[in-house]
Each structure stands twice: as C-alpha cells, then as structure tokens.
Length: 385
Image (cartoon, rainbow, N blue to C red; front, side, top):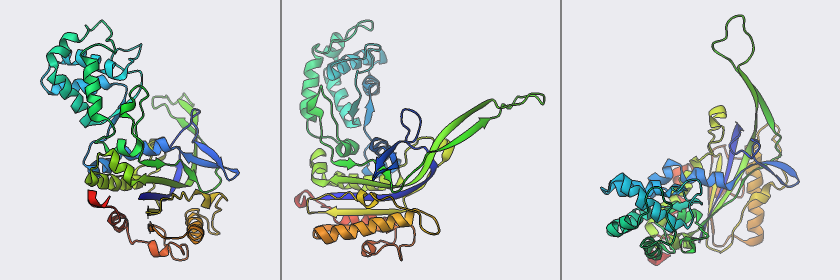
C-alpha cells in the first residue's frame, strides 16, 4: 500500500529556497526554465511544522553535530553535576560518532539524526554505568578516544537495541544514513520530489534602499542599497509514502504509523520554507490537493502533466490551467493503466466546475473530510497490515 500526495500551490513573489548565489532555485524541465523548491527544504519544513508534532504526539528528531549538548541535558536532568555530565557526554559522543571535530572536542565530525527517546536511552545506559563512565572520561583538556572502554561497549550494546527501528515519525518517514554506524541506517518510507513550477518562469529583481533615520536635513542618500532576486510561480508538489516500510521502521506500531501519515498530510498542507519570508510573506496555502491510496504496487508522479508548460488562462491566472492539465493527465493515465486498486481523494479551493472532469467524483467539500477519507483506507490494526 502506498499513499501519494499531489499538491498545486501558488506562491506570490518570494525567494523561498535559495541557491549558493542567493537566487531562487530553478531547473530546466520540458525544455524551459522552471522555479524549483528542493525536496530537502520541503521535508525540513514538514518535520518542523508544529501540527506534525501535535498529530503524532512525538517530538521530532534532532539533526545536529552537538550531540554532547543534548546528552548533557539528559544527564543533568537526572541529577548529575554539569561538569561531570559534559565529560561523560563528550566521551560517549566520541565512541558513538567515531570522530570529533578537530576544532571542537564537543562537536561530532558529522551530523547525527537521533530521536528524543534514543537520547534518553543513551543517557539511561550511562546512568546505569555511571561510576565506570566517569572514571574513564578523559580530563577536560584531553580529547576522548573513540575506542575507549567502557564507552565502546556501551555504544555497541545501545546499537543492538536501536537497530532497524525508531520511535521518531520523521526518521521513519525520511530515513537515516550514517556511514560509520550502519546499524542505525533506515530506509526512508517517504519519497519527496522537488517542487517544480507548472509553467515557464523568469527571474525578477527588487532594488531596495534603506533610509538612515539619523540623517540631518543637509545630508542626503540612502544608508544602504541592494538587489534581492525573486520569482512567483504555481508549483506542483509530489510525495509518496510506503505504508509497509513506515510500519516496519516504527517497529510494528500501526497506531503511530497512522498518526504519522495524518501528521505528514496535515503538515504538508501547512509547511512552507522560511527563506526570505520576512521580506515577502508568501504564506499561500495549497489551492488543490489530491491524495491517492494505491494497492496496485505502482507509483505515479503527475509532473509530466506539465512537461508542456502551462499558459495563463484568457483572463489571467495559472492555478486553474494547472488543475486542468493535471486532471487531463490523470484521465489519460487511468485509461491506459486502469483504476483498479487506486482510490483518489481531492479537494479544491478554486471552484472546480468547468475545471475538473476526471477527478470530479473524488472531490471532497473541505480538508477535514478529505483527510478522513484518506485515513479510512489505512489499516487500523497489525492484523490488517
């Protein structure tokens, strides 16, 4: 079983996701230049969207090189002196990560993606072996050794307990890879595509000036001036969740897997990358969403509906022509490949009459009904998986 999500979202002038030159990211598709938002930016916005945590009832995992900070917090909360907790956390982090930053003994050389429960389990392991851990922790002025005992043994024991599963919905969805600790690797249950504009896009530039408030009447000129690049576009977004992989990653917890899917769907509709939002405030919700529950083993990105760039309608606007292109492409796919095992559920903000034909029967009156219809299709118990 797979749950696919197709979204059309129109953004006002913005620069939500910048490249290394500060320009909005873009890509060529269908022979023309398109606006683009990277999948990494979309996934980060989803997992940090508050509704994701509220729905799953589990804190999101933390991706950081400052493992020592989180571990120290846990040990101090358990009543250990901060100075001792920092030494022990540093030694454990060195054994866990293998390498520490050469410029900072408190920072790992790579980003680590771990859940709050996993940090709690690490802290519990250290607390149970506190005297030995404290005795073996090197002094503050000496770097810890990755293979030092008893830390190497504690890490090995902890890894056996954590192998192949997680309690963090975002790790279960988006996966985890750590070259030095393959035991922690998890295949992602969710694939997220880069968002692409359904149409050709040109770059625009905003020339701005900032006034110096303390200039005298005799002084003139701007205190600062510059150029900000931006664009505006109607984006097509696509994501796909492998239900069985998600349940496996969550150690068979079907109830949590259901909350994870619901949290993902809710967050995907709300989450917007934060780039340049103070300057543009492009807080535009999706205009159209199609969720497809598939039991046929296939996967359909509908991006090729826009391989020929959409053009504005006679009266202007790109949202409705994009909806029409997606609807027509869906109709052709179902004619060619069939509809068996495929359940589409959609909602639309623009009036769908005269716009949608093939997906008209899938339309729901509002987002909550749409979400309810999707969740009804998912297994409710381990026996149904």
